[in-house]
Length: 368
Image (cartoon, rainbow, N blue to C red):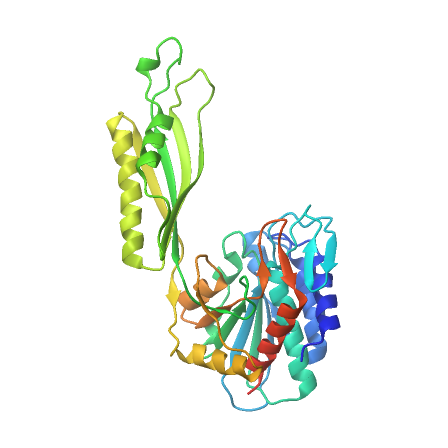
């Protein structure tokens, strides 16, 4: 079983390191120092140089002792902000902060669980196949680390990404595609008091489009949102230019295309109706993936979970993760809940027992 005190120390060590995206150097060095005594071959790629960061993606390899299914575990080294000046509070089984910062359990809980699982495996001397660990950078700002990761060395591997919310150890069986919609609306400026009728308000055109738009949760598979609106120069000028950033997500590609068409049409039609013009750019952020319960990787994971006396919990995903990119690149990767909750907020917390369960699961997955 996982060593509770060792898990607690590892987690506290990691969250004490301030590591927002592009500043993961100290976390990378910590991981390398933790894995080297276990016999892992460790390398770091040049992703940091490519994206302007302090560290690249770290890969660690442990040669198998028997011929068995090769597997890899993944988690990301960066966190959202703020974590500077973190004040950790341990309340029984729960680890949280004083509310002035986030905790950073997303995804330092995942790193902790992988490190502890590997320590358990090596200490036990139990047989295992080839194992790789992938700790990537800048996940939070757009999955940039895994986008630059060379997956050619993972062919034939099953992947397990320790990075989602409670319940600890749950399997995320699917996740949506996500498309960013960048919109510019061009109107015509005029003095708002002297001659407003000579102007064309880009802001009014945008507002009319948004008011008619289907947004929020559209069904169990599909969501849409207009996240930012920016424009205008002064209160007494009819705004001639507005920019917006919106998105649509769905686990169903046909529904996603329909929602994108709906949103694009409204922006264009409402702008044109006022004599304005809309320019729209679509950016695919990541693609959907889906596993069923009979998939080999799911059966493999379920068997390992039952070895530690637990039954699988299957859940649907609503966000993106490294698992989306690995699967898009042809490497099967199952997203596993690392057991944190309220990620990206000052109310974030994780349970010590949940991290212990996940570390036990990691060790069970690794054993041949």
